[in-house]
Length: 282
Image 1: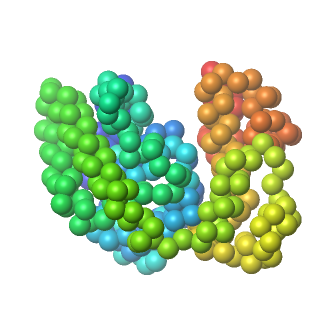
Image 2: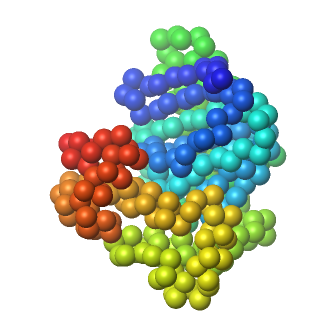
């Protein structure tokens, strides 16, 4: 059973806040593809979260951030009650706060995919982020006429706090010291993301990276939570969405992201997005 504790959308549908409790969690959650950026605040459960080759065993009050190019999904280690707060927002929601000398979306955009996504409960508490989240939820409950303004200004303060933690992590070299990752997998992820228009097969990856394709399948799934072909297909659809938003013709988009066969592109795109490529581009 999924209980919605609180929820909110801004007037322009650029910001969405949801506080959910699942009893038990839905263990069939598929790979996430969002047009929005996400701030995920973990409250309780038994969850391992996969983001672009990184694996995080979550602790209560941890925060994860993901931009719209990062594949991510949770994996449940047990059926323990699962509570979390998810904030989805479009970059346009905060563009009025962008300055020439300050990037309000620095923590989301100024990093390599799959790096610096995790903010520990200790860091989150040190910067008083839970207090900001509580304030947002209180304004949601009040349903006052000023709540849109108050929620937005509090959220902007949260982004500033995340930027401060992000800068601290970079300056301390924390990622290199704290997180273990398979360098071969990172190389393969980079190759896939830079060659989505090319034919990518297990045989190709085996030859290029000098590793058995059978072992590669095992290690890739272990490190990312996805099969190789699942990852490739989702990344192609994500890239296709980018191109279609730039008004690239549908057939050109199909070829540019490595599908070549339009009927297959159509089926996969509609399955993952819910609309056809032409409908999406309108």
